[in-house]
Image (cartoon, rainbow, N blue to C red):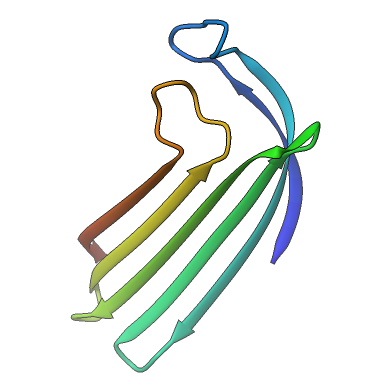
Length: 108
């Protein structure tokens, strides 16, 4: 678990009265947890809560879950699930997004 601050500058591809360029100081609170279930399987979670300090109703949530299954000493099967939420998205943009990734990870 940790926390911090960062400066955020976001510029939409087209600036309008609804979609403005923003300059903000944003908080960052995160939690990481990992567990090795057995010799071959591990699960990792990383979650972020990022409020704009001048308007805490404007925030982002990012949650990532990863399951790794060892195939060999150098190769792992990977399943990643990600959920992202923005409380103040640009016009014509969804406030949330869910992503699934399936892949192989090779360690040299």
